Length: 77
Image (cartoon, rainbow, N blue to C red; front, side, top):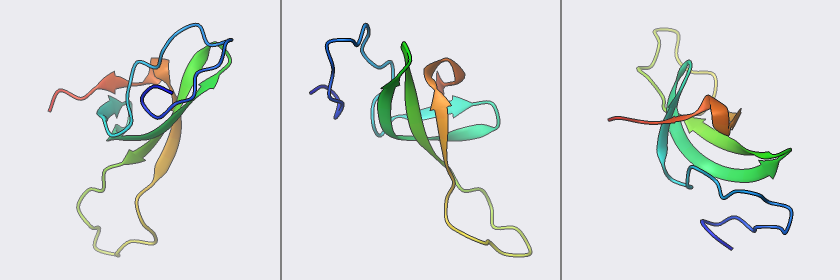
């Protein structure tokens, strides 16, 4: 087990990003919640940071999205 991820014999690479890391992607930035192997790459659950509350209020909590490793970059902040 490395970085909270169980590696299988079929995995060719280790994940580029770790749980808890802040990352950027088109449309925002967020924190890695979990990653798992997906068809020769890694898929990441990313919890988006919440911006300012809009005038009409919020409908729910933070949004968590699924992104592939190629869609993510390390945050420079």
